[in-house]
Length: 368
Image 1 (cartoon, helix red, strand yellow):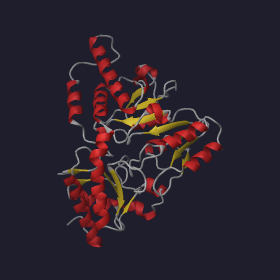
Image 2: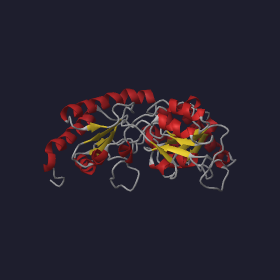
Image 3: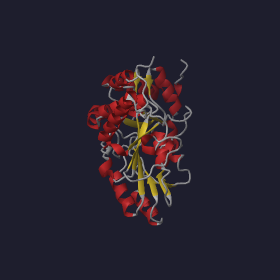
């Protein structure tokens, strides 16, 4: 039985308030497009959730388009017409695979996008190019300088999409002042349910849905709305205060990194020189594969991940760390991501289990 969950960046536990709100909404039949009383009640619930999410990200409610998750939101955003497309080399697979022919912008050793490279590339393109940069990286927690990026793209007449799936609830987001054309959001990263997300699309920009067949979301995304999921997402957004998150998680991050830095001096923490999310630590144990570390910690009752956990369940070297120049260390990196229920005791338990493995060297046998 796993007692310590430190994989919030993969998915966060469903918050109690979210669960209660979803259960309460499960009784009556509810199609928000219906004109009768049941339908109108459902419509009010959808719009309340839309307003809650808009408040959290500083947008207008009408700029929120509900989707099936962050992946769909990113894919919709990247269907915007453009003369050329550039993305960073550390983007989530949802962006990388939605723009397979895009130019990849380099990042520095700390995982921050090279702004000079962005400026130079845009200078070689006709106006109307598209750029996609994530707000914060899912593996390292490194926060990108979105204000500077937005200034560069605006100067060159390019549109800018931001994958804010990991940033929501962990860092301040203000769509009205960020200078971006769109944001991708996801419910389950902030204690909401899986299967629901949103694309925040600047007023006046056309939506490009992935499917056809209905007039929902003001003709911007067809299909009957996922009412229960949307309600849960709205409540989760209301609860996802980034200032509270920062105040809770930052001391835990410092506790962890100080102890591992002292007791495992050859371990490498990635992105430590950059601004990072308060809950995320990407660390490599030299000479020990990430898969071995995940297995050992799992046996010790601690859940963490090796790199990103969004593919087939197989552990592969992180493209993010490779883009940062990590070399062979990428295969030895794990991700520790805390959340609102994480305690100092959880951090101690993780550190003790990880340090036991570190001190065992080549003698470790996971079967013992």
